[in-house]
Each structure stands twice: as structure tokens, then as C-alpha cells.
Image 1 (tube, rainbow, N blue to C red):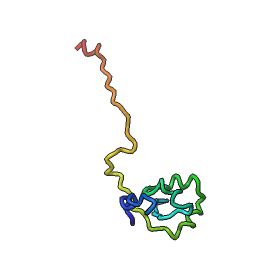
Image 2: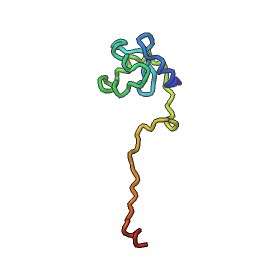
Image 3: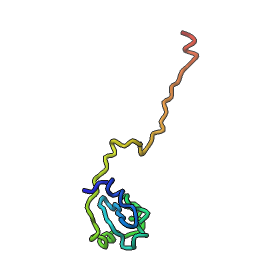
Image 4: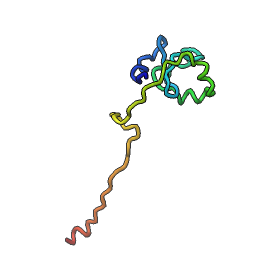
Length: 98
């Protein structure tokens, strides 16, 4: 398996790797300029927007292997921050009676 860290190092026109559906590829049938902005990261979502599923067959020869899943349980940044607030209701009228 290829680590996400290793994929992220290949982010230039000299070495352009992308992740598609959990697999790493080092080429794009439309050329480097077509995929360069996604170099070194997961491009699946954007790939889906403009390519039919059979497009992967065209780049099968450039398949490098599966990417190692990220362990998000140790992420320093919460991807979905919570904006919940605690509210404490104090009835001052009852406090004054005591």
C-alpha cells in the first residue's frame, strides 16, 4: 500500500500522482496539465464530475497500487467542528427567596 504522505510528495509536472477511488495513478489521458491541480491528493470527486466510469480502463497501465487509508481518529483538526453551546438557565427570583 502507498501512504498518503508518499502520494503528497508527487505534486508536480515531473511526478504527478493522484488518488482515484482509493488507488494511486501516475498519469492522466488528457495530459499533465489536466490533472496537475489535483497532484498529490485525492481527485475522485472532481474526476467523477467530468469522466464516465469506464475512463479508469484508459489509465489502468498507470495504476501504482492502493492507497493506505488515513486514520482520522488522531486528526488534530476536527473536520466538522461543533458549534453547540451550553445554556444555563438561572431563575434569579427563586434564588432571592432562599
